[in-house]
Image (cartoon, rainbow, N blue to C red; front, side):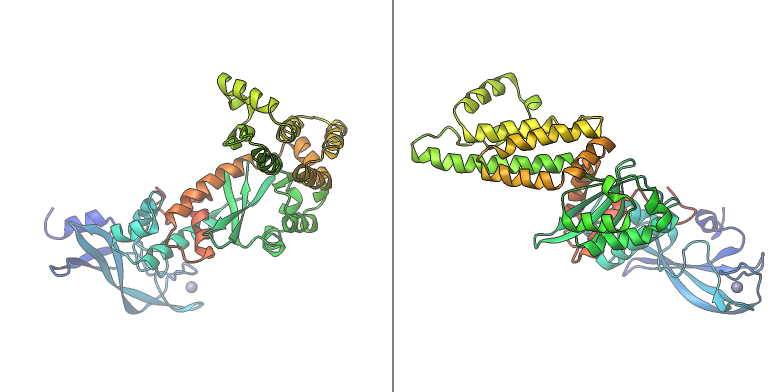
Length: 411
Ligand SMILES: [Zn+2]
């Protein structure tokens, strides 16, 4: 292959495009590959696809994958056509999407790197600014969202996650059946979830069969307002209920510990995890030690027994039996004099309807918890993110299950 023909072959743009010039510079090491449209098929309007007469050209430049360590650019005087319907418009080139300054190959490479590295690392690897990488990431997400075929989601999980340390939250809606994040938005107020439901459209709202969540007032009221029959569909997640009870046990333990220490008894020192760890995850030796610990305390052991009893109330098949089981537990709990447990029991009593829904619908945020731990990885990679919008975008990029790559290059 002689002369520049090999470059035409490498770029693979077809007979209509020809390399006319290659311009390397040593300092900085840059390579400009100039392309020209050589005729062949007629020029077409990018909007309607009609063949139109040429009008003039516009000089444009795109960053391409580096060649031999040279920052490489494609340069072209791109024809503009005069469309009777759309006026004077630039034709679509086959190597880039819309008006971006990067070729599709280049964007795809940035996306592949972003999957495994931080924005900062990708920026330095690809010799781009932080904002340029972020722009490619945002476009990838927009592309993926536009391509998402179905909006029908039978089951939803709603959860919040914090952004940085300053109590800034984002709301994450996910589909527990696919494990994908469906929607992310800054904030955790009622309006945030209302806007999501509104965006779904009525047909899809009606198709929702369960929404699992923590006992968080704003999410509850948004769902009651927007999802038909929500009072039978809102499911309070068992792991959150368990967490509230675990926290109650820990508060009782700390109070009892303070009282025992005054009497010179240190039995509860360093035992936090023994009370929280489930019996199935304990070794035989741990079980024996724990039995001694239980026998040596009164209040903490009682709180722990209530927590364990509640953990066994999630396997009912009938609403009536589930209600009966929880009412028995509530009676037992209300007899104790442990303020943190009483407080949690009151919360459970108020939300029992949604707890029973969770049992009957077998709805849990378990998969959402898995998403949460993956969000933590995104957070670590996103240290440079200055705002929640970008953090939200990164969550969709990594966990949205989206088709992110430019058209024709879905690798
Ligand atoms: Zn047109």
